[in-house]
Image (cartoon, rainbow, N blue to C red; front, side, top):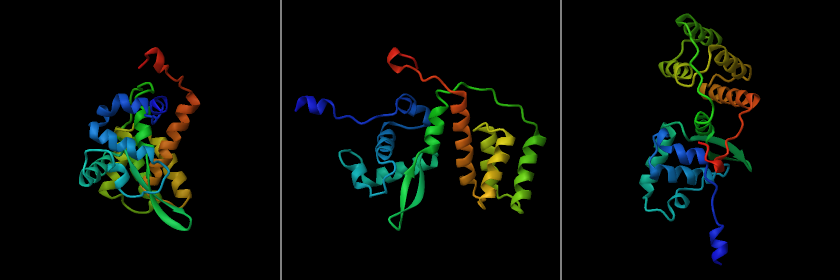
Length: 198
């Protein structure tokens, strides 16, 4: 029985474990996030399973999940399963942020004000309307924080528009996919954690 108990473990993402503080998480938030990840691809079944075995209250857990969503580490997606629409947690942006800890840091590309202005004009022209302040802010973050170049943003917007979608959240998923493909194409050699590489 002791041997059996020794081998009951859950997989924990090593990069998340080493960098959770860099993502503005404390230990309680990390536990909630790990429990959510454990239920990835499962429909949301309430908070009881998240609270069970912890010292946290339901209200604390709800508040932490809201914080994780605001930090853009957890998303919520609605999927149709067995003819019912259910909500599921997604972690695409979390994995994207974790990838930044192992990918080489690249210098931000020099972008002129004209290039950036052209992106906004291009999207407004495509959508046939002015961007809202929230949309303007989100696209600005893609350029300044996520370091997407203007051509990649245009490509993502085009791909979404061809599918009759003008949601920036959808465009963001496309950009994330394009970025993952770029990393895969460049092939990053996995680090050997056992040899102490960090």
